[in-house]
Image 1 (spheres, one colour):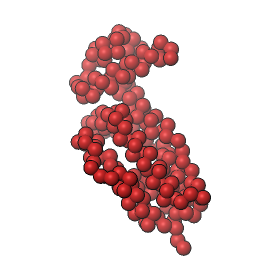
Image 2 (cartoon, one colour; image 1 turned 180 degrees about the vertical axis):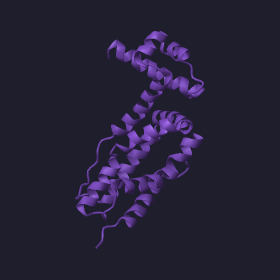
Image 3 (cartoon, helix red, strand yellow; image 1 turned 180 degrees about the horizontal axis):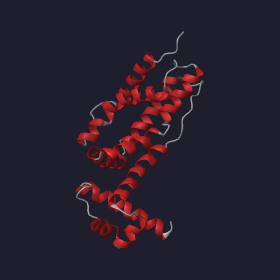
Image 4 (cartoon, one colour; image 1 turned 90 degrees about the horizontal axis):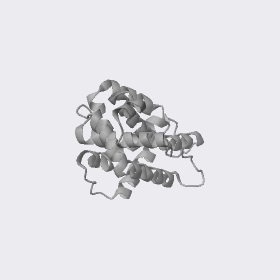
Length: 198
């Protein structure tokens, strides 16, 4: 890793720490530079303002989502098994300590700043999630009835997140549920609703 890339990463790591501890409005650029062990001038060379720095952090979150490999429907494997595996991987990613902490940090600021929230969700909407792709392929193949894949994926993931992501996101404690059983139940409900016509 080049020195400039390392400095940029150090600044981002320091900003994440400072924003988590102080919140965005109270975070100080001086403190971020101190934590990153760089001068303020170096910090401003990489990020011209605190707002640009925060936008870079939201991009990290979006990049982590985008890095998830695209999934394709495999006609020789039961769709239920494919959806259960895909949703299980999705939940494991969402509930990872680093992602959960970053997500909390970003969401707390999005609640405060509607312009930032609109920009974030506009970027997020342009991403074709892996489960949406899997569902879209299954619809094209006739394994599910025709519908809007993004909407269908949103329904499935919203149900799952209600039980397995939001409680931990809001309270910091994992839900005392059998995650595999919850995912299987949610997938069953989804498949019943989107069953292909016979």
